[in-house]
Image (cartoon, rainbow, N blue to C red; front, side, top):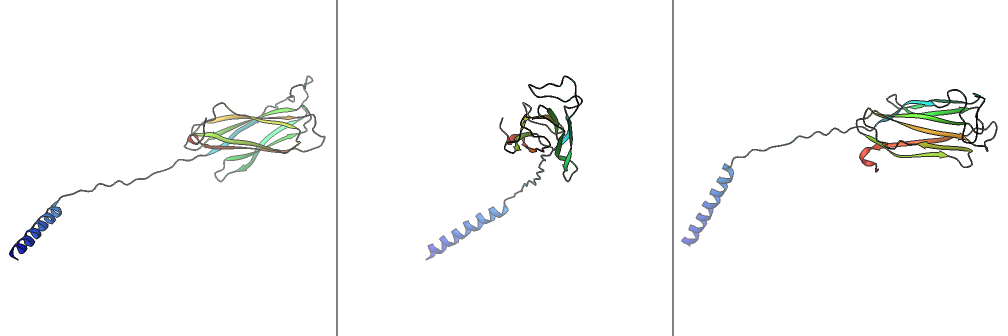
Length: 183
C-alpha cells in the first residue's frame, strides 16, 4: 500500500510541476485587423456625333454628287443615372431615304477605378427592318480608369424602306472588369 501511496504522490508531484511550468510560460499574441475597400466599375457616354455634317452621306452604290442635305442625324441623352452620367442615348434620323448612310461616333469613358473591357453587346432589331446596322468595335476594348474609347455605329437605309415609315432598334453594350473578359 505504501508503494501505491508513494506512486500516487509522485504522479501528483509530476502533474503539479508540469502544470506549474505551463502556467509560468510567457506568451505574446499578435493580431491583424484587415480592411478591404473594393473598386468600382462605372462607364458613361461622354461624347457623340454623327458623320452627317453637310451633304447627306451615301451607302455603297448611291451617290450625292449634287451635295443635297435632305436627311438629318441627331443624338441626345435619353437616360441619366443617379450620378448624372449619360447611360442611354437616343439617335434620331429624320427624313431619310434609301441609300442614306450615317456613322454615329460614341465615346465611352471609364469613370470607375478598375480597368474595364467590353464583355458583350447586341443589336436588337426586328425582322424585316430595311436597315443595315452594325457596330465597329475597337481592336482593344480595354479602357483604363479615366480613359476612353470610341465606338462607331453604322446605319444604312435600304431600298426596301417604305415612305413615311418609322423604324427602330436598340444597341446594348455591357462592360465588365478587365480580368473577367477573355481576349
